[in-house]
Image 1 (tube, one colour):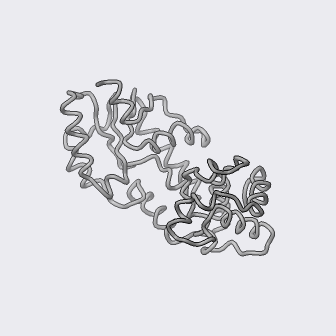
Image 2: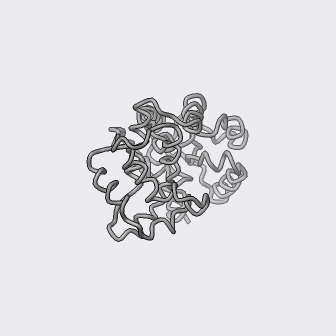
Image 3: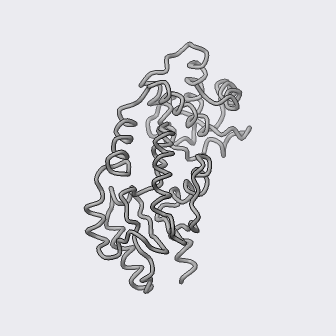
Amino acid sequence: MIAEEFKRDTEYCTFCPKMCRFVCPTAIAEARETVTPTGRQTLLYLIQRGSAALDTEALSVLQSCTGCGLCTEYCDHGIQVYPVMESARAGAVEQGVETPEGRRVLENYQHYGNPYGNLMPQYTNRVGARLLQRAQVFYVPDATSLARNPATLDATLSVLEHLGADNVAFWPGPLLDSGYTLLAMGYEDAFRDHAKSFAEIAAGADKLIFASPHDAKTVIERYPEFLVRIKAEILTETRWLASVI
């Protein structure tokens, strides 16, 4: 169900009524014990012992962890809950267990290259001539911002124009993020395929400037775990701006 190295932590968390439950954003938002770090670990412990079923409802609880790391920060023992959840989600998907949310994310990635749907029309309309298939420096947008507040892209264009950064091209797509959401939902094989395709688009580029720090971190830290490497220098938008201002 989960990687062997996480089993001790899962059992330990089950019997540890500590502060993590009071800082978990999901537990605060939903106000129920089930989605606290302790609650998730207890559920996983019961599943491993055969006392609870690994079904859609259980997977939904395991997927409620955002990976923010606050539970670890407040844990007296430094236990990292999120890697356990990630491993468990992948194990569930391997066994054919999915949630409707996970399936929707997977299908959106398969059809549109991001977790939200068809974002390319509004993306290309806003970016215009800066959208290139090949370039030395690419600006990679944040799919979440495109889906929820596409006007942020206009602000980025304005900044680039004021800086005179004519050498910065916009990422051609159709993959509009690092694919991390696939990994977070347990779809490791789909994440590996997405990473490989993303790396192919990036081939030949010297720099990738990411609007999302999380995407940048995923490319730097998680891609190599799946034997995918990008030769280009990886920068967050703020770090790149600091270097040119």
